Image (cartoon, rainbow, N blue to C red; front, top):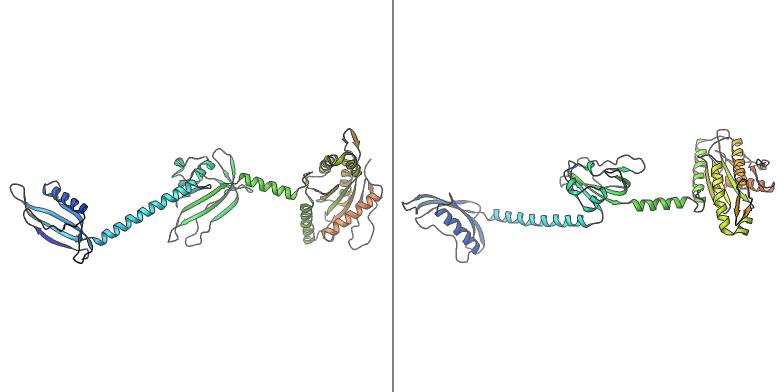
Length: 422
C-alpha cells in the first residue's frame, strides 16, 4: 500500500475497526486502550499502531490517528476525523535498527569484557586524545584508577620515553588519507606519577573510520622490565668473560675489526696517533694451577684482570682471550706511550701478592706489542705479530715487553725486548 494516508469519518458511537479476530492480541489491547483514553477525554487525540492482515495474507503495519470533532450533551462521540497510514517500511527499519543496536551493544560488551580480561594493558583515546577506556592491567601499570583517568588527556596518565635517549615517545595522528600502520616500540619506559619507572613494550594503533578519518588511538603495552633485564644479562654474557668480567674473545675481535676498518678508511698514518694491540701471556701461571688447583687459578685470574684494568686508561679495551692470555687495545698514543703502558701492566701483575692456602705465588707476564694503523693489515695478522713478539719476550727471559716490526712488508725481527721496571 505504501506509506500514504487516507481520511475517514467515525460515526456516532462506533468507528471502522481494522482489527480482526486473528489480529495479534497485544495490538488489540493497545488499540482498545488508546481508544478508551480518547473517548473518555483523557487524550487530545487518538493514536495507535497495529498490524493488519492484507488481503493476500501478509501482515502490514498501520498507524491509526484520529480526533473527536463533536460530542453530544452527554459527552458521547458525535463526529470525528482520522487517518490510516501504512508504516510497514518504517517499522521494518526500526526493527532492523533495534536488532543492529542490540548486536552492537553485545559486541561492545564482548569487547569490553575481552579488554578487561586480557593480560596486556590497554588504553583507548578519542580524536582529541582524551582517554575513553582503561583496563585493569593499564590501571595497575600506570598507577591511575580508570574512573579518574576517563576524559583526561593521555599525557596525564601515560608518559613513555625512549630508554636510550630519554626523549618522550610521541603519539601523533596519521595524515588524512595516509596509511596508518601500528607503531611498535620495544625500548620504551613508562614514567608513573610517583616518578617510578617501568620498562614496557608498546604498540600504538590509530583508530580510523570508514572514511579514513582519525578517531583516536589504542595503546597496548606490557610490563617488559624482567624481560629487558634478562636481555641485558644475555647481551652482557655474550660479550664478557664469565670469570673476570672483561670483554671476551669474540666481542674483542669484533671491536678490533671495527677499529682496523676505521683506521683503514681514515688512512691513519703511523705518525698520526696510532692504536696499539697488546698481547699478554702470564708467566708461571701453570704452577699455581698445579699446586693450588683450578680454584686458585681462577682466583688469580680475577686478580690479574683487576691489575691490568687498573694499570690502563678508561678508554683502553681489556679482554681475556682464554686461559691465561689477555689482550688490550690502547686507543691512542705514540709507540713510546704504548711501551710505558705495557711496562705498567707487567709491574702491576708482578706486584700482586697472591697466596693460596697460605702459600705465596709469584707470577709475571710477557707482552707483545703491535701497532694498528691503515697499513697494519687484517686483524689476524696484527694478532699474529703481537703473539710472535710475546714469544720473543718470553725467550728473552720473561717479564718484559717486545714490540713487533712496524712494517708489514718486512721480514725484520721484533725490537729488542724491554724489561719492566724493577
